[in-house]
Amino acid sequence: MPWLPVHLPDVDFRYYSLSLMFGAALLTLWFVLVGYDLKDLSARTIASLTGYLLPRPDPALEALLRDAFDRFDRDLSSAIGDCGAMPQQPGEQS
Image 1 (spheres, one colour):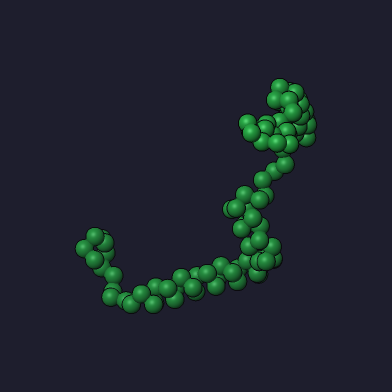
Image 2: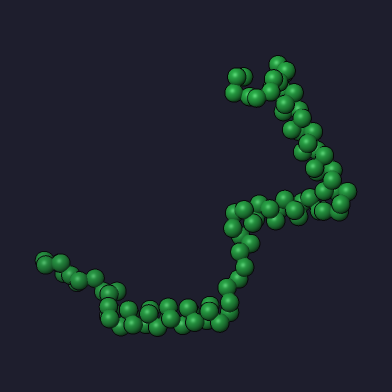
């Protein structure tokens, strides 16, 4: 590997993966010894990475937005009128 500044011995990839697994095992052991609940820690990590642990919005802001959308919906339905009835096509009988 000419791009590396130091010479590394020719070691098979399986030994590198073994050292990675050993490091993960030591990290897990450290978490257990410190007192972390690994099941809860992994669940919280996955939930926070996927975005399910976002903080709730301010209740006053939420009420303000709900009121604004309610007024918008009311104004839109009064502007559109009764769109539930389908107009008849010429030649159709009801």
